[in-house]
Image 1 (cartoon, rainbow, N blue to C red):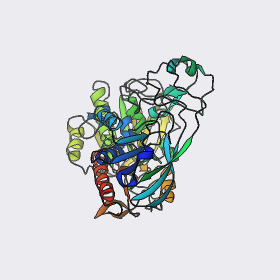
Image 2 (image 1 turned 180 degrees about the vertical axis):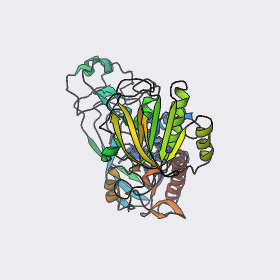
Image 3 (image 1 turned 180 degrees about the horizontal axis):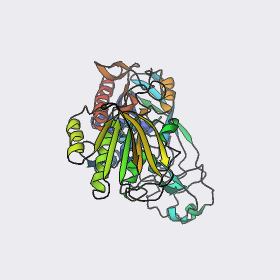
Image 4 (image 1 turned 135 degrees about the horizontal axis):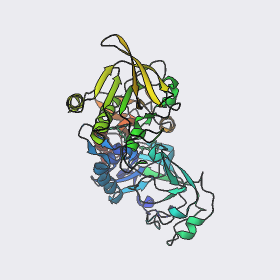
Amino acid sequence: MTVAGEKVIFEELQPSETAMVIGGGVAGMQAALDIADQNYKVVLVERTPSIGGVMAMLDKTFPTLDCSACILTPRLSEVARHPNIELLTYSEVVGLSGDAGDFRVRVRRKARKVDEEKCSGCGDCVPHCPVQVSNEFDQDLGFRKAIYIGFPQNTPLVYTIDEENCIKCEMCMKSCEREAIDLNQEDEEIEIPVGAIVIATGYELYDVRNYPRLGYGRYKNVMHALEYERIINAAGPTAGNLMRLSDGTIPRSIGFIQCVGARDVSKGVPNCSRICCMYAIKNAVMAKELQHDNVKNVTLYYADLRAFGKGFEEFSEMAKTRFGVKFVRGRVGEVYENPKNDNIIIRVEDTETGKFLEHEHELVVVSPGIQPPKTLKEIANQMRLELDEDGFLTVDHPSITPVDTTVPGIYVCGCAEGPKDIPDSVAAGSAAAMRASITLAKGGGA
Ligand SMILES: Cc1cc2nc3c(=O)[nH]c(=O)nc-3n(C[C@H](O)[C@H](O)[C@H](O)COP(=O)(O)OP(=O)(O)OC[C@H]3O[C@@H](n4cnc5c(N)ncnc54)[C@H](O)[C@@H]3O)c2cc1C
């Protein structure tokens, strides 16, 4: 049972010695590595053309301000090279049967139109492709061709043809010396026997367009936090130059608006997304760090500051004292554009002083809450798993078995269970790996 360019291991797999991890973000990668290091086989299924998840898109990470790519890239290589890990990217689970110790998982491998074994990732095909579309990895702020890798560390380093936009001109095919391009390649379904499953499908950002009063999608100088991450990233669409989108100038004043689509019972997600306060403080600090002489005013508008992790409180204090970031406690009511200069005026009640404020900023960054990926519902149906009121996976017992789902042999980690930062996602990845390994060792229920 081979797909073009794939290692032929499926026939050899025994459910008793194989686990599947679904989702290749930082949580799923950790789970896969920890199971594989115990000498079990792991099939890691990732929906997009590369593993890495959201962490691969980030610039720095709080609270240490480590370069995200610098700490993630060695992990990407470790996963790709691990002899016990079979990477199935551009693939999705479409069905499941069986029980703990003896599941059968059906996986659809989407046609990449590029032979994974023949493609060396040289990129010689790219200049020949005449089709340019926006790059989703850059939050659609940059461009890519119809034959593409999302980012330089794409793992595996194999190109993908985006069928929706490919015009079948065959220019890429003619330019590929290794004859890796196969426009006739079709989707394929395979059945994989595994003894345990870890779900690590992560999250999606809440669609901030649902709050038109906050200006996103209406005003060019309102962006969301992940767009900002790409803008300040040296490998991003502006080569790391902090700028506003209306005119490319460095914003001298930036406002960060918190809790957009989180902690809101009327729409969005009723619960706190846990990570937004910290990522906004990080990005406020980064504005000062990158453009110390130019960015004069950075203000964060928050409802309730959540800085609960190790070093987080100190980090937020440092933002105030060392970097001069201002904090205003109050939910922003609305924003509007100053037609003279495209600046954004924020209206907010400062709930500490009771005063109504109008602040003008050259750039506004909204912090979206996080929600489960749309595909999680499908996976839950296929696997008879329960979802909580926010749509994340329910665990058997949140205190005693925090990574066991309600189905024996199926475990969960990272943001598939609920909002988490990177350290908590990685810790949950290791915990889920341990639970899955116990199931494998016992040949069934753990
Ligand atoms: C703007 C912003 C800044 C942040 N900054 C920081 C920071 O500085 N420090 C920090 O600790 N945290 C930060 N975070 C949080 C961080 O992104 C998460 O903690 C982390 O990404 C969670 O990892 P994960 O593996 O659970 O999920 P994800 O990163 O979402 O990975 C999930 C993976 O699963 C795949 N997937 C989804 N559905 C399927 C499916 N059906 N089949 C197969 N694969 C699927 C996805 O394509 C993805 O690759 C930030 C978040 C945001 C939005």
